[in-house]
Length: 260
Image 1: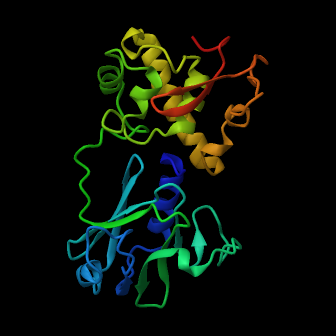
Image 2: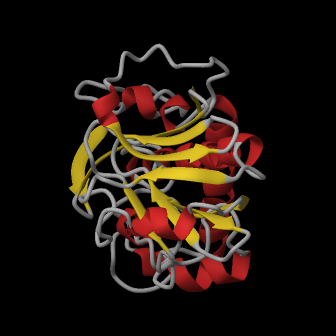
């Protein structure tokens, strides 16, 4: 599932390749991906507009236009953004993924003939006008130290569930949470309100470091502990068998020896 690093790479692709280009056609015929809009509603709002900014908070991304309408894009569980055939992190003119064009759920066509496509095999992505971002907490890669302490370090929720709550901090998904908690040597089942100030600061530091590393390397799957997230996996730091449990509704792996 795309997490903050993958969404940031998609945003950067749009910023690099799509800004300043005028929209001449929109395929918004997929009523599920474009819900609640009727077919043609997004097209009517965007045709003739020029893309001016690409922004992101957490896993939510949106593109602004010179005429005012804002296009929200969400990658869902398996979505990708392509601009002129290139996907995020892929310099090729057309990814060799063999993806049927039926997976192209939403398309902007530009005046110069190029296209921006939301490609999504599972059809769980979204394209929506003027997305409501009011429920999101601050971006996980940008949240300040004091705000992080206040938002995360209280109550009885398991620590992993707290940092994955998008209203607390936006952008931490399942893999990013496991990697950051492993780096910070903190147990995902620890009560969030029991953390010391030093532990909270360490966790914030590792969330930011994990995010930067994943953006640079190509996604959260590149994390150090991710290959050990399997039955029989062992901690890459000490060799202890990894613990497996459901935390906050998500399958979770951690080292019972090194994460307290």
